Amino acid sequence: MILAGVIVAVLLGWFLSLVFSGRLIVNPVILSIGTLQIRWYGLLIALAILLAYFIGRSLALKEGIKEDHLIEALLIGVIAGVIGARLYYVAFNWGYYSRYPQDIFKIWQGGLAIHGGVFGAMISTFLYTRLRKGVSFGFLQALDIFASVLPLAQAIGRWGNFFNYEAYGGPTSVPWKMYVPPSHRMPGYEGFEYFHPTFLYESLWDLATFAVVFTYHRKLRKSYGETLALYFIMYSAGRFAIEAMRLDSLYAGDLRVAQVVSIVLMCTGALMMFILRKKGKHLPKEMAE
Image (cartoon, rainbow, N blue to C red; front, side, top):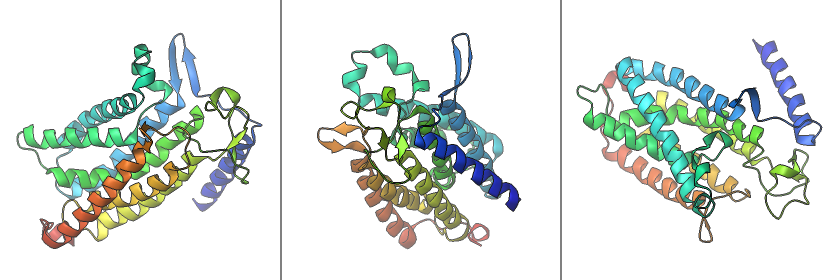
């Protein structure tokens, strides 16, 4: 098992060195059949959702959640998340999409904002727990499980940005700089070749967030909502820092939207954690143990 891991790591490092140096240009399309295209972006998001589901499923079943309820909520949440992620992105790029409305539906080309996806999934979960008769879980309980596996899904999904040559940072000469083909360079940066691979920075931060949040959920959580609060704090702290490096940030006036939302979520998470640790609805004794 260890040997296999080492081999995979070496091969991945060799592959990245070829792409980052510009000796290999990746194709965002895996397979084309007529007008149908299978893209890395969509495949990685699908794999991320499946992996997160199977890990989250084990947590949910231990908490007495019925699997059919979990699957229903997941399917609705995925749809709501994709819609939310796209609407969020389109709203803050309305100057472009108002001129090219036909591009609004081309999500396979990228353009999904994670904050919009999270908010969409949260809204759908709230409605599901309120409207579904006999539901076997509560709103905060479901969001705790969601937050415990979401960072892992995000870490995987960020590699869709890699294949699309997007979500990169400013020009740089650091040893791990990433070559971006001219056709994918942001306006005003056509004369530069190498950029910060901010998608990689966030993927690594997401993995670290997953390790901490997942461990906290299993071993340290005392009240429903604490896992979600910790996710808000950890993910947002990394996103705030990394966002400052990106060239493709969404803006509201002169403010980077993701940084503003990150500050709000960090404050919300800290307040939630304080209140829940003091006055939150404690888990059943067998779950806490």
